[in-house]
Amino acid sequence: MNKNVRVFLVEDNTEYREAVRLALEQLPSVELIRQFGTAEIALRTLQKTPPSEQPDLILLDLRLPGMNGLDALTRCREIVPNTKVIILTQSDQEQDVMRAIARGASGYLLKSATLNEITDGIQTVMGGGAPLDKGIAKLILESLKTRLPKSEDQPLLTERELEIIQLLAEGLVKKKIANRLGIGYCTVDTHVAHIYEKLNVSNAPSAVNRAHRLGLFPPENRKA
Image (tube, rainbow, N blue to C red; front, side, top):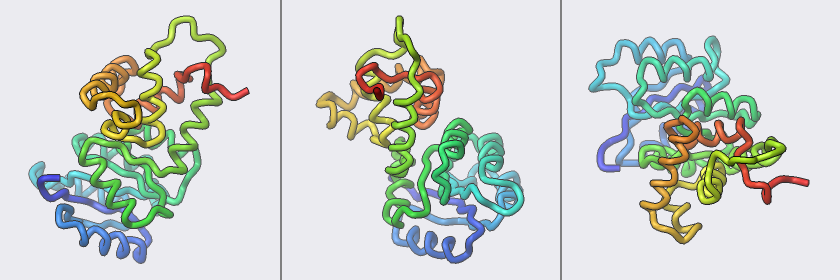
């Protein structure tokens, strides 16, 4: 990251807020500019914040007093559409994960993650990736495998694109996908762009969510 990443933290647990604050202070390229205990106060602040001072990223809890994180996420996407949002929560429920991704979350991390994993997640998002907790990535992958169509006469994605969407579901960024498949980064970037176009989405979490709903996984990965 070449410039300071301006971060808002929306979390009602004061002790956890303090732990995250201390972790972010260790990153010279990240600046925690505001902390909030409720979504309502955070949203009012966002509405009053000039464009030049808006956060680059919001760390958002789901279980908040008053307005919940999912509804707050929807409002954040309306008020500051260019701001990335990482869900940081205790909930590993599939329903919460899928709803958050569908509403535009750039990443989904659990509070059981280490502080290093959280700071790595921030760097990943600002670098164009989509961090997912390992357990969440596995949950999504397993869910994809069990919701497959009975017939695929004309697959929407090519074989290579299906390989890549599986790796996106595992939480891999483009560079790691290129290394895993032994192909160039630019090739992966082109395939991902085609996936986004075919699925009518704009980021990796949304692509995984759409694939989840459409059952776009190859037959050899189906469970018996």
